[in-house]
Image (cartoon, rainbow, N blue to C red):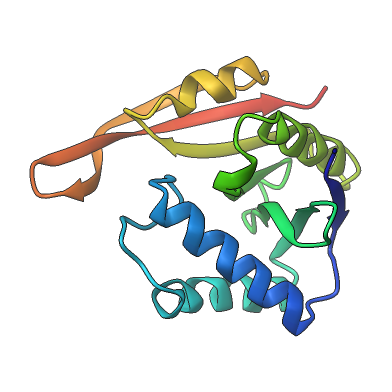
Length: 174
């Protein structure tokens, strides 16, 4: 069953808790979303609050995909540039699909919905994101139309002796 995507949903306690659970579950399944397992909800909560604050200030927007039960199954946060020479592209952060939904095509659906949403943003003609090298994400994003435009070797330290590349990807929207 396809996900239902909503841009800028109302942040209810149920949505907040659902996104918090999603982020925690993705992290504990090894997802490259800013944490290394094991993490608990209280580890993730401060980062989610930072995103919500940025949303309240108009710097971020949330795209959420809910499954047939109404639970958040996928998310991506848009971040707008404040520098006047970079307002023509947006960042995409915290792109995730719940582990129980992996392999259903929801990641592709999420990225397509993100591209559609970004096309409607005034003056935006590209999406940029970074991903952790070494887990196949650059291949996945590449298969969705993103191009690798940069790489910083060893910029992400997952653990002592386990440094990963920070891969910069770009999707032109034109």
